[in-house]
Image (cartoon, rainbow, N blue to C red; front, top):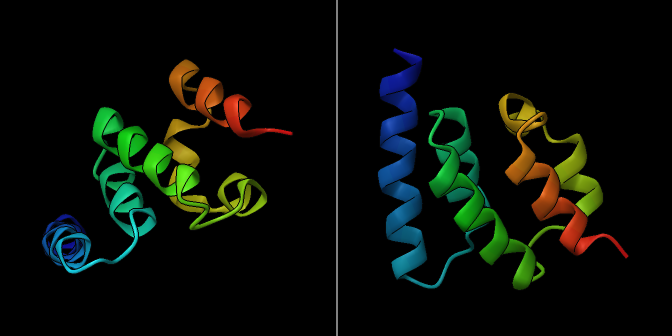
Amino acid sequence: MANQTLQKALVVSQKCIELGGNYYNLACCYALLGQEEEALLNLEKSLENQEEDLAFVEKDSDWDSLRSSEAFIKLLDKYRK
């Protein structure tokens, strides 16, 4: 049931992007679905657009499954000041 709900959220988030919405929620949906590559791609777009700050991303539980990922760590390091 949760996976089905996430799939619906993913579709809605993708439509929001088409309409000018932000990438952060889309990135979170991908992360929660275990789709690391898509999650990080959209997270980077979100960080580039300053949709969320790094401190928020570091605390957001949506990213718990990727916290030990080398690619996730590298991406966050890129945006640390």
